[in-house]
Length: 196
Image (tube, rainbow, N blue to C red; front, top):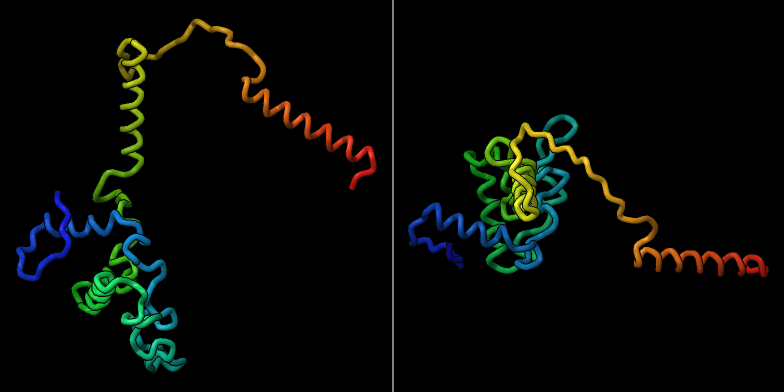
């Protein structure tokens, strides 16, 4: 799949083009394209631009001046293209059909809620299932490499031969142990001579 720099307004909007565009930004780190690490919505009014008084009367939020934004979008220190994507998320959040998605809340992450590669139990393989598959594949590779027979899932492998491989430290661990013993001896001598 080729990289798409900009989705043209006049170009045909295909699933493939949108996926390529989203993948381009989803796979970049936040630092590489200048996204923000903090939410943009105003915390006191929760991005609504209005705060309720104790009597339930809505008033314009004084913290954001009614914009719902903690920082004004034009003043964000990001590239122009990133600012436009943030603005688009903010504007989409005002539309009724996207109200449940709350893209304004995630505008600082270009609309992604959580990490882009998160797996859902309902719509995708779980990361646990991927780990189990990878573990089974690696086990099969190791079995084939060692020349062991192919054992079925109901077979219990019993190892009846034990071999003594040695005791004590490995050469590297022996050096570390000697260094620790030497340091403790120096500390003991220092204390015995009236050191602090």
